[in-house]
Image (tube, rainbow, N blue to C red; front, side, top):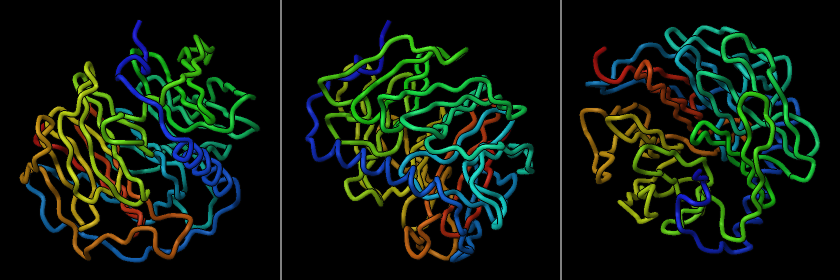
Length: 330
């Protein structure tokens, strides 16, 4: 059986970068653990141009706490937000209907980042000492299981690979969990850098995206914006690199790789070469996007993609808006 550490040939990461990742994780946990005071939107964005992406709905006043890892995910039925749809409420796990954006359920507890969702469950870092992964039922919000790692400082990344949940923990631990009950299948203590270090384009502070033939990394030393790298999933060799000032995570459909860029656009890139696909791009007004300015509790930019409905979710942190776009015609 393959695992994430065997996918890409990797080399040692500097101690400085590993310490930086741990610091980011701890800082994110500390901020998320307090009752936030959400600031109002700093601007409002409207769609200027859309051709083959049809806007299904847009919802204002969605507050996602600041984090360098994911705060938005989706399954075929719901969109999952770690934050609040109400300025007067604290951080919860919120499920919104993917077809109309209406609130379906909220968790009773206040989870941490990151988040991962599929048809079987919603996985987040739960609260408690050390690292924790909690699985929620995507339809009802019921807690299905919770797994704690007392030897960990927190969860950095969650990915699903070959029907197993891979949790990378700080400092330098990689655990593979059975999705049905959270039982640890095996633990790794790699001497080489973890799976989110591509070797050819540096550390990905946001969770990499795995497809059939590629892994997409957002490399960003400054944490604010950075390059996109596409790496061959088998050989670990660089397929292409694109320096576009990307401020969001990366998502991939069968048609394109989508990113948000600081200039104020949602860009679609050709998966084979990284070139822009103009007809699948979306332009917003009130440019450029405001990144990490006056609100230290919100302001990130996130994407999520649901393959079953071919729906792209776009969260604009400076305007606190969540958009749902249908890609092409169904």
